[in-house]
Image 1 (cartoon, rainbow over the protein chains, first blue to last red):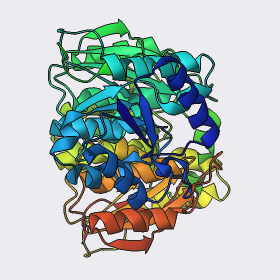
Image 2 (tube, rainbow over the protein chains, first blue to last red):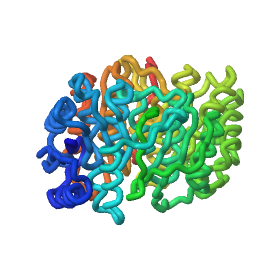
Image 3 (spheres, each protein chain N blue to C red):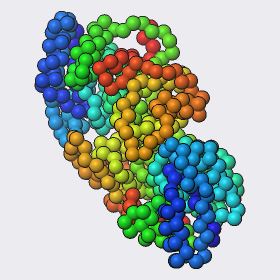
Image 4 (cartoon, rainbow over the protein chains, first blue to last red):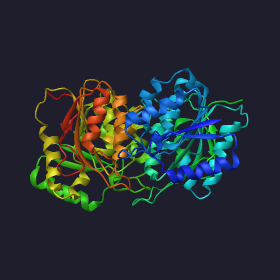
Length: 264
Length: 264
């Protein structure tokens, strides 16, 4: 199985790639990881110029010899190339899974909106550097090679809260009617989480429910007076969307895999 | 002239109010500043509970004895009460100017969307604490008592970039077709400014143009590779919206006054 790695946001280094290759070689004999050289470029904040990242993604997505596309790392940058990249995808792009999270939610959302392939929230290459990161890499490769368990509940999506809020009103915004939405975030103050929940619950009023993944919240100079659970409860109350409690996603090595939609 | 002060976001203290009262007493003999006691409340992050802030705003907006509503301070909180407050406004609310900026952009946007009164971007009470803040207070009071110069260019609005991005897709989002949009921000990294510009230029594609106010950008652990002017230029290029160069607004004592729409 050929899994292509590209980096629509920030780059990874060769040592990170080597660690992931070692895990694949040891435990996933049927996997060939194909590293697009774009993964290692640097252009300001990004893994290469917008056009270079767009071309790399389109190349692997359209390649009939590639079985799945695995995103290398988040950070920021996907929204600068997603719309034009999606417009260039061909029929072969629809046969693949696309695995990533965080900033890559921009691309997963756009794919899902357009019904292209199988967008999947889950670990990326750069997660190997976290404590327990080898398990995250193994989880990702296991899912890519065997697929997950069948699931016939309401369709699900998972996003970084700030990324989902930032794609509202853009051509990447998917229709999430009757979906369960799982959200996580990192390094956002309570007031930012609250504001993003205002926006998300306003823009997706017909969700079937919202689950709360893990949040890492920095200390603010002004105490907010409510924790993340209370913020979720507040906005679910205001919007009338069901609050489903905690969900097993987050910016960490335990981040679970959530295929968008229904996979039964 | 009776100017009511309320605080839909964060509170001010009595000493701040006294400093503003002193300026009004000295230089604006015809002004009576009416401080709603809600301005001085504290409830977690906010100047009182959501319902209390909503009630205070509705009370002064609907009061026929009040000529203008001046917002005390930004921070965060307006989006938690704006929609319900706007639904309670009566005809008398349409006779007034509403002056503020930053987080108060949530209310100014909603007023403008619904065609209620005269929403105006400009200094707030708490600005008295800035270096040069007395001039900002005088500028606000002068505008409230005499009105600004007539203006017959394209209709204008001014927003904090992050606040405007956060109201996209919500019931507060105004129609800005053929408007000139002036933007400023503070304490947001370049990548956040870039992401917000993606969202704003996507959601308001029919703007007449975008002006760049002052931005205070903290250092990031990863250099972005472009400054704010280049970010504005990029997204104006991508969206086809005219980039109008610099604008005289910002989170500072020099923040100029921008009545929404046309005031000729």
